[in-house]
Length: 117
Image 1 (cartoon, helix red, strand yellow):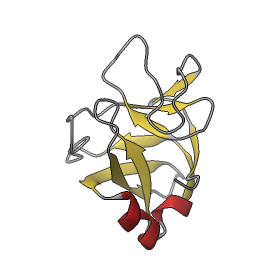
Image 2: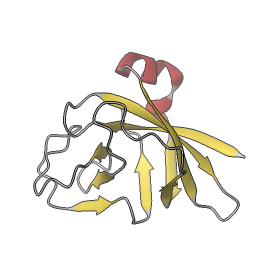
Image 3: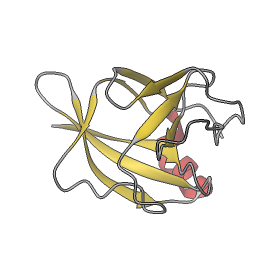
């Protein structure tokens, strides 16, 4: 089994958290856990350099964002980073600050490259 951690920012408070994902034999990724982490710790662990490609489904036990509790997220069409999403009609990316009028929702295929902070 291949496992990895990708970083997300809460859409409500902009705090960083890690999402543990596991790759299944069919190539899809499953979100299994989410946890609070500081930017410094994420850098030290190398989570800011991880890259995954494919669908990201959630397991039944996936807890969602440790800050706001949502299970949904979107990918910014500008910087490619992911943010929590609580179905806001307008959302500014917590990573690059741009209005996400070009978003990829959690049901689409992702190509997530962790850019440096």
